[in-house]
Length: 568
Image (cartoon, rainbow, N blue to C red; front, side):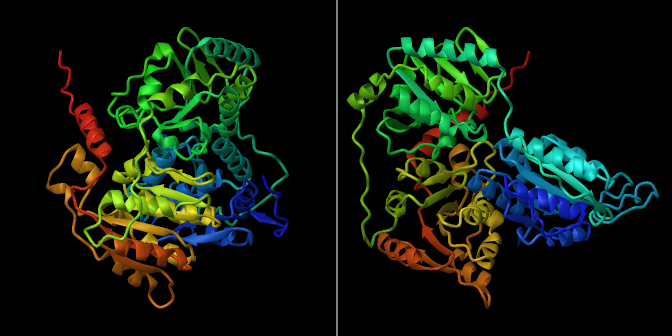
């Protein structure tokens, strides 16, 4: 938490909110203006320590806030106008809820007198009932509040931020347009509690029981799950890795959470599309500790992963579930850090993996003049990565090729696997660049996804970010093709590289090119790494050239989706 700004001696509802956003770590917020939030934006602009990032639309502002939260490991904020803005933002907030990100969704609202005086208002549903936006947001947030009285505003704001940080979920604040500039007390010094506290007896019993089982196992294995991050348990999991010497896998949505250069890391566990040798090791282990896992149709490849619950310890954000006993009110970070002190080192699973591990085959980057393939593309992307890279992989074939990248120590990796909203990565790239400006963001985006949110490239140019975007042009929605093909998966081709000049207009510094051969790609990457500003490389790939794992995964997911109804 940061110290409170003292640059605003008296406060309004809006400036109070700004002070609290600064205190919980924000440096930027994302917005689209509208008449219901203009006074609120004026008040937030009085805080010189917060930068306003103006986005092209509300959905993209929400995606940008999502990427910002991932980059900083803290909260993010998006500010929109009522109804036409809020309902556009909704999908991004739902994604943040699914992905455990503390996104503060802030909307201007109608004048507090409008409903009492039975006024029909613009931007609404044409009925005198203006609570519907909060009711809708209640389903995708941990807290949804209307701020209609200045006296109550500080308490409501503080409570909402507390909930967002403690639960690592979005919250919704709707501030009436005639309240944003009203005077309130100055924000007092306080702390915000980020995590719940374990029940001491449950924690102790869970640790002792789990340690007993793990120490008795012949070839125990660890598997990292996506909930490790939102539970603040990454460091504690690393303590278990260091102490145990067990082989360590990670679920696909937890890629990037571990240093993959550690000798004990055996790859991505994704059922039948796992890294070579990884599924065999995990599924043959006599005991696996899954830390913060999610078992969805996507992470288990249509529920085909062979996970034996009788050979698994499942540590969730607030419980530990063993084969014969469950322990509740146990914080994941507490459990893992204490468990690490109880484990006897055992490298049998690492030794077993080395015995049957398949030799790693990599495609060295070349300079062929033949048509570019996906394999060649990702070989060049692999050579581009270093410890300061952050890969943002869009839903689709980029998931499968991205998870096969060998991440250097210190690099980062992001996908939106639980929610899987195509187009997410464009806004998320903007937010990630602003949240981690010292990193080089490498975005992997398919043409179909890009068409949903392309205009936010102009915002990246506007604010001087420097990602390298690989725009993979293969003529359609590749992931949908492999699940269930049809004419709806074909899209209108664009001059994607040419769009950057459109977005540059007279004052932008974005750079773009098109690559259809490996030599053209190599030349493009060399130029991109030397360019000070956004780079977009449109990569032309054959429609049927995709990862073999996507083909297999798509078949399993399609089969799971296509189960006939059980009619009795």
